[in-house]
Length: 455
Ligand code: AMP
Ligand code: GLY
Image (cartoon, rainbow, N blue to C red; front, side, top):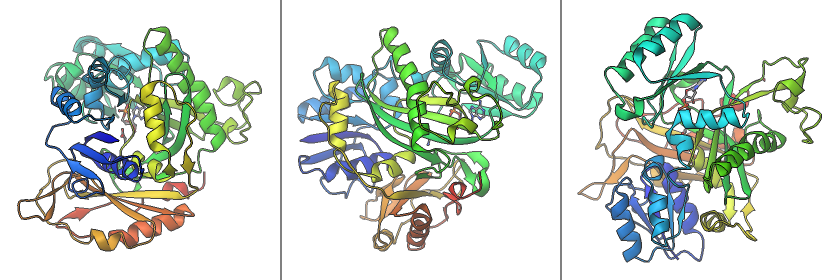
């Protein structure tokens, strides 16, 4: 089979790597790919941007691609799935209408509200004056302000006072910093707690469960500094047991899919639910009223009764860096899950999973998520991969005109380590990182520590 993977991050490299191990796969094209996918087994980069969906269609048609896999949200929200399906091609991911669960926060909030999915209370606004009037009346801080549309991870601000709130609202409505993505704004209640990512795949009817993982969004240790795309992740998450996964499937994902279906929008592809889990919800509260497992739920969890789980956001694709840790636990059958989802029926898929625990640490260019330099030579990746259980996925890298591997983006590498325990996986990841070098490299030193703290 010939595959096409769209994107240039470590997420796409990890998918390419995993799919390359399937004996049925002969060739994988990655558009546009990176310095890692350029040299990966069976892989070849092609020079088409991830948002050039017409050129991608032409490529898929003329190269008889059997399955296309979209990594990021942009192509989905441009309707790449609709376009490919119209032309009779097989593509993994939701249609444009279904991908609105990520591309429009007001759409996602409306679905959650109608389907009684636990989330922060919110109001939505389409102009500056009314939004400011609301925050003046509400006067509760912190408060969360979100641009409605896709804003490359920059569309959310947690405002701690009225000035911060007004400044952000002004930049959205009056300065139009997000263009049409800021035509609407959601203002919502601040939720406290620990974040975790739920990931599953659906064929439109049934759900193939993957894992809960935990991202580390802020740039500095101890979750300080500005938010990034994600500086590291791990799975499993001790905070969230298997029964909690089932709880989320039942109380968040199924109602969401049913509501979409009822609106004539079938959903296929990855379902990513960003969760906020508040363990401080008192144990002695009546759980049946808190969205926890009440006696009618039927789930066997002992721990969930003390949690409060609410949805922060839905995404229509794998997370990055969450994907890197999730796919590491799948040994075989990934191709079947993707094909089954794309075809609308999983059928008798057989997936072999491993019980490893996985940590990935992102190495970034100093200055990211603001300004940073590129073009610095990267060395030591082969040595890093000599550490048992380690695989280095590339993100912002490229092969320059002299054939050298150089930095080409903010997030550069995702050093991923598998071991029997998270503790060992963390040690291996950081041991591998010590072998890697480029000018001004930066990484957090505490990835996965949240797993070990007393909760
Ligand atoms: P989003 O794009 O909606 O996922 O928001 C980006 C990040 O902002 C999330 O990962 C959270 O860290 C934070 N965030 C968003 N909404 C809330 C909320 N209601 N309460 C607390 N933090 C939030
Ligand atoms: N790591 C967060 C995301 O992919 O949305």
